[in-house]
Image (cartoon, rainbow, N blue to C red; front, side, top):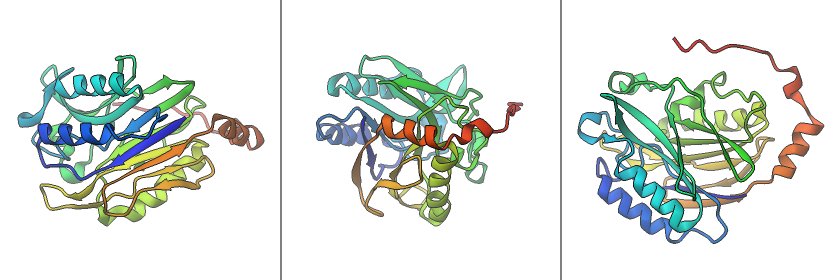
Length: 257
C-alpha cells in the first residue's frame, strides 16, 4: 500500500485558509497513493480556543475530508476540533474513499499546554480496516503511552498525527521507532512545521518506519514536504512469523477511569 504524509505549516486558527491549502496539495499527490495523512488539528493548529473554533460533528471539515477522499480515491486522515453534546474533542477522522468515516478522540490530553482543561479525553481505542490493513489511530501525546498503543495482535499500521514541537524532537525520534519495534508494526507519523500562534516552533520530522525500526522515509527538517512510502504486508508477516514476540507478551487491562 502506498502512503503519503503531508508535513505542512498551519495558518493559525484559520480553517478556510488551511482547507484551501491542503486541497491544492492533495491535487498533486502521486498516482497510486492509497492513504494520505495530515497533521493534528490541521485546520487550526493546536489551539486552546475550542469555544471559538469547534465544529459540530460532522461539519465542514469532515465533509471536506469525505469529498477529498471520494474525489481522489484515497483514504484521508487527520484531526480537528469537534463539539458533541456540549463537549470539545481533539477528533481524528479517517475518511474512506467510499465516503464513510471512522473517528478517534485523542485519549491522552497534553496537560502541559492545558489541553485537558479545554477538551474531553476519548476512551475508545480505534482500529480501522482498510485495503486488508488494520490501522490504529493515534494523536501526538499518545506516543508517550506504550500501554495504550500496545499491539494486541490487532493492528498492522499505527498512524500518528501531531503538533510535536522542535524542543522535544529527541523524544519524537526515539519513541517512534520504539513503538514500531515493540509492536512489530509499521508507523506513519505526520507532524507540522513552523511557528504556531504561541510562537512554539515545530521542525516536523514526519516519517515512515518499518516493523524493524528502520526509517523508510523522512521529511525535510523544518520545511513543508510530502513523503511517500510503500508498505508491504508480506514483509510485515514475515517479520512476525520469523520472530513471534507477541506470543510472549503480557496480558493486561487498561483502567479508563
